Image (cartoon, rainbow, N blue to C red; front, side):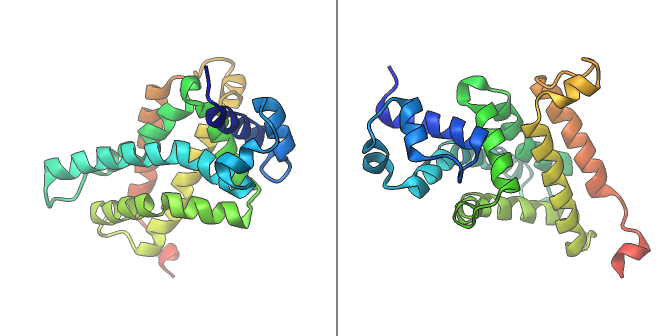
Length: 214
């Protein structure tokens, strides 16, 4: 039997992902979770406290797994720069596996992240920046070491493009299957990881043209 706190988190995650954070009321959440009106305030203090807990529940384990994989690479190679593909796999693989795991609520959560990026709320953006900040800095450092000749401005542009490719892939589970006529399987997590790492690595390695350095 699901406990009250988990029922509220599950209901909030689903409603925030389908209706949006601002459009979802605590009454909506209570109705889906089948709890009384005081339950959210008792467990989370407020709607802002609830969205923070919803995000922490998925992002903290995701960050832990990403850093575990990065730590493994660093321990194996010592002071040497990490191979680009291994850095990208450590970043991408845990998120793809989560997004394709219905038991972990991956589909709802990735849809929620997509909505939060499209419909930014200043308070929620602050929470996301705090949750992803340390992990992001670790990966940026590793990328700089792996691509020492890439100007910093180009690195950040390419990270931005890579993040967009990841977000689209993680959040959209049906469009690719439709436009490919079923040739592509959007639930093939390991195939997605392999292709996404290869695609992003190629873009990260692309030489900088003279016009881009002006």
